[in-house]
Amino acid sequence: MEWNFLAVLNDIDLLFLGLVNTLKVTGLALFFGVPLGLVLALSRLSTFKPLSAVAGFIVEFFRTTPPLVQLFWFFFALPILIDVSMTPLIAAVVTFSIQSSAFFAEIFRSGIQSIDKGQWEGAKAIGMTYSQSLSRIILPQAVKRMIPAFMERSIELLKTTTLVSTVAYADLMFQANELAQKTFRPLEVYTIVAVIYLVLIFLCSQFSIWVEHRLAKSGEGTVR
Amino acid sequence: MGHSWDFATILQNWPVLWVGIKGTIFIFVITVILGLGGGLIVGVARYAKSPFISYPARAFVEIFRNTPVLVQIIWFFYAFPILTGIETDPFLAAVLGISLNTMAFSAEIYRAGIQSIDKGQWEAGKAIGMTYNQTLRRIILPVAIKRVLPALTNRGIEVFKMSTLASVVGYVETLNQAKLIADLNFNPIESYTAVAIIFFVVLYPVVQATYVLERRLRRSD
Image 1 (cartoon, helix red, strand yellow):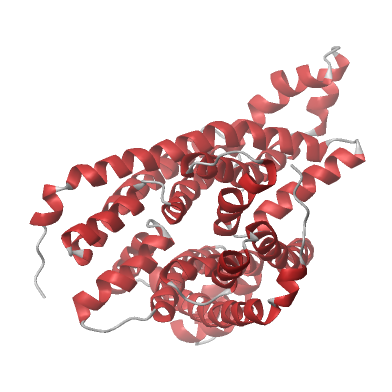
Image 2 (image 1 turned 180 degrees about the vertical axis):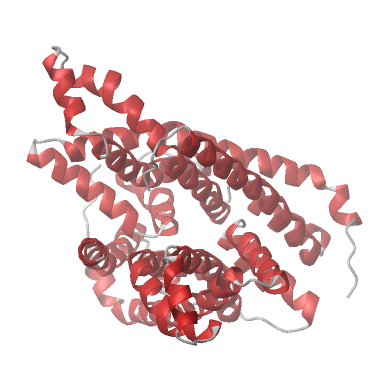
């Protein structure tokens, strides 16, 4: 057994393209998933029972079913059900937006619930409406506490996006499979790809630890 | 719209799905035992005073926590045999990937548990003549593990969901069998919905039980 990275390095741009697509899916899923998570969290906290029940069901359902099953469902089943054409990218973005929104919803919820009731009452006392108190008083404080949990979830999302390779979206994992077949060098290809993910995710983790320390110094408790 | 749901074909193919469910249970049991058990060893090693023990443990944790589990499974399936000459079948590759990943995550949970125990407990153990190992085993770990029980249960839930990834390398589990049924009967809607429902029905009560456990432990602490 001899390591030979030459064949892989010649086609490194294939992997680079995959990395860009991985980041694209992650970014899009965050872009849609975070606002959706906030909507789910507010619905779950709503005093209107049917709304909170529905939101609760969505959150629990997407947290307890495997993301790969969800992806297959959106890719293979949904197009038949509502007669739309589904591309791997759309299926991936839809799946991971909803899946991560369920987790973000729980982070938003515990963040909002961690804010003292007196803050709501104070806002009401000076005549703010519900949405004003939420956007001006509660969320600014809650979001700061949520940042560590939020970053941890985003890193999880980045790792989960490898699943899109199974529906033939050209992410880093998929490009690795292609390159391994093309070069007959699976050992080198998969090792390089593992190292790329390791470096990328390790840097993200270190960054999130750094931010967490900064927040701890500024005297904010964190919510997990 | 206009799709008429028909779960009859799923019920007709129940034996096919059942084979997959057994496969899921089998790989879950093995990986959860190896992952949470091995994690305890790594977690304790991570806490060790000797850098020759704690650094390799730390490296192990960082490597397996900071790479996607699917990459690990595929690496063990395609790359590991070339490197070592040891043939891996889909089952072994999936078990290696999922267990090692779970070991790394649970090691951090155990470590957090051990660190949360008051220093006085260590000193008390020492004062009555216990060795490091005795104090760890008899005093620290029982309390530490109790404290991190909810986090460990959450990991177990993650492992159960992760087992579906074994289908990517062709291990016969629930999702794999559902794909087979979907391909043969042209009913992906019912097949994948059935799998989602199976996972939800199994895990929802477990998640609820975790909440109850969390509340109880908080009260007893």
